[in-house]
Length: 381
Image 1 (cartoon, rainbow, N blue to C red):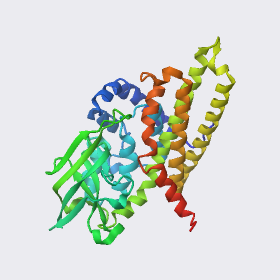
Image 2 (image 1 turned 120 degrees about the horizontal axis):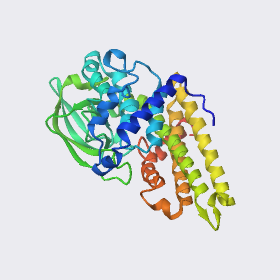
Image 3 (image 1 turned 90 degrees about the vertical axis):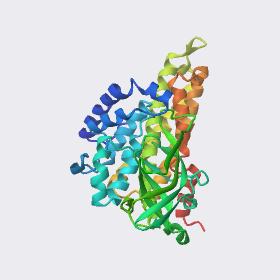
Image 4 (image 1 turned 135 degrees about the vertical axis):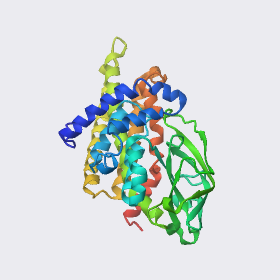
């Protein structure tokens, strides 16, 4: 499909990022998968080359361009290369909007230069052991003590959890107010009482550090309140659509990558004296997968345009997130099947794609939560 989403400047940016991946990521990713986290040096190099904070104003060292298409380029190339250890998408797509829209001038001066340079790695801590996608069930609590907050609680499944230098923590600050009783507090590396648990052993995304975090009487300065006290849940709802679009971008790129590698495989692999691609069943399966991949690409590109225009709704993002990721899982499963026994071998890229993809329908809000968001918007009852 001929895409019309990008301009020449995005194509140049893509070429530059491909070179960065080839030079600084490809030679190291297998090692990072073994150690369960990427080296911090790759963040510093990414910052040096302008791949962090593209939307951050130039005065803080960013690119100064509010254009999600640059984010999409990074996500697409990272996904197509299967470099799943890089946490750049979380940094650029999820955390940057919180800092740009909610941080005050002093906080921006304190955090954004390091954010863009790769010196400050970021994370957001929403999920708890007992809450999952139920954000209103969050139990982590922060109590005022003079100008400070005393934070207690635990979070889990936190991407960039081991490497992160600042973590945006969602906490209850006034339990009596329900959804209006949550606030966002920024916890910084080294604060007493802030502990990182084990680097979680996942079935996929092996090079991406994902950790449990605990907070025991952590004294968080009042100056680390992000946004407005009591508006944390609203802040989350305003920023989740872009996070979900980021996941949809990954899904579309992964589908294209797996489709391409499977087309090549069925051309080369022979059975019963001819390529398996010559079998009618294979052609029919591939025709179906090619059509679905194109349909997902059309939807995702259109919604990226809406996101850039400021017209993307929470319901739109939920549609993109659940449908693209479910189609991704279906496609990869069928592609793996066409690889036969080799598809089950971990040295084959399709096997890695299969393991890495499974979380796509879970994080950022499960498929079931996405359908609930859409269903409620239809006012069926």
